[in-house]
Image (cartoon, each protein chain N blue to C red):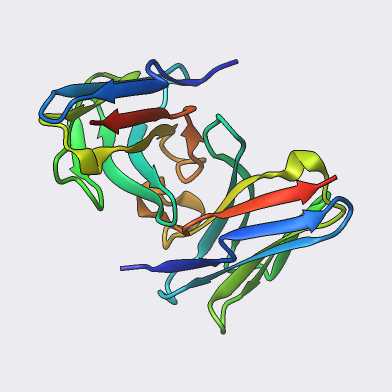
Length: 116
Length: 114
């Protein structure tokens, strides 16, 4: 089955700096890669996703890049703010745009702390 | 605005007790999930249900069972709780078709087994 590795497990950055979280996956058939953000006391929430036919996707201060050859994808947060402090999870799935969440394999999570 | 509700946020149980974790969603979603969240291990799927009375084992079903008698409600059952089941439990749901791979999570139920 799919295996997703996520690094680093913890990350501290100064407010205004950029943060990068990296994930690698094992199954070359995976084609859907979401990122979830979990704030303290809340459940994870989807913040951005990318499909294998796209190399990069941006949404305001966050972006995700995908390298299918190397089987890794990354989350980039620019101009970090204190409200970006949370646990971030990457995931991979073979389900594509119509697949079921049943097929998602999650990474181990990254605790991001943005220091004021 | 709350869409997936886990009624118990914190529970403390004793070894051997039967534990029920309840989850209700108000989005008329067909699919419901129970995950377990442990530090360094991410989210691991325990059970999945794609319809009333239908269920599938996830990646770590041992020691757990589930019940889905109504579309909006999905219960996780620990028949005989053990200390290694101390964890955060997250319920989630998705619709069929478009959006089937986008999970809406509840806030979680933190279970401590003594």
